[in-house]
Length: 190
Image (cartoon, rainbow, N blue to C red; front, side, top):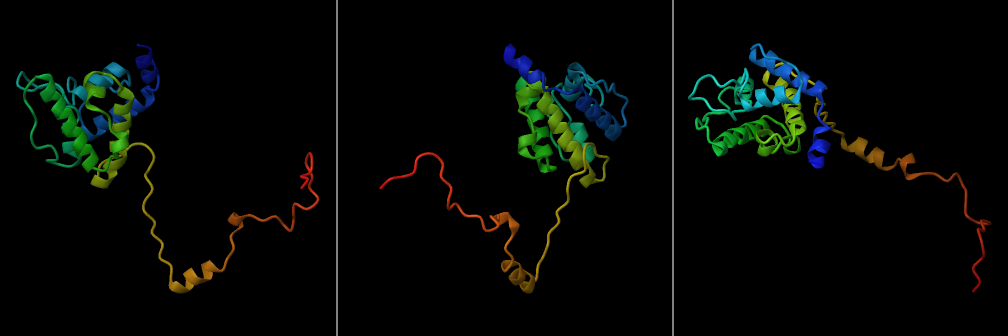
């Protein structure tokens, strides 16, 4: 129980609210963007719009599959309709695989049980934030800081040779100082 409180203490309602506002912007559906754990859990598990259980045939545990399908159409092709826990968890896992394919680094995703069993909702927020940063690559609004773009530099052979002759100050400089005459403690007698 103490461990769960420690994990939950990392949860940021501000980041969760920002994530829910982003989901609302992408889907165009009117959702409550309160950043509380309960609201995030209900939205991500599929009980509230935009991931709402529409009728008796639709099952919970379809996390943001609709969200990723709006970012990249047809990225989730088959949704498990069963309400059995392991089928719902397969839907969550499918979302995670698509998120990785959209560019979310594996270290920024969550474990299926983090969402399904409410073990670590902070990692769910981290994943949504990361997915939000990647959305601009697909022409959708993004959240969070803009990611750096690759800046490849090509140097000519002449520039490379000129650089080899330069001694960088990173190598350090002692400005002519030596250790002669330094005597700390007892001298060594041979």
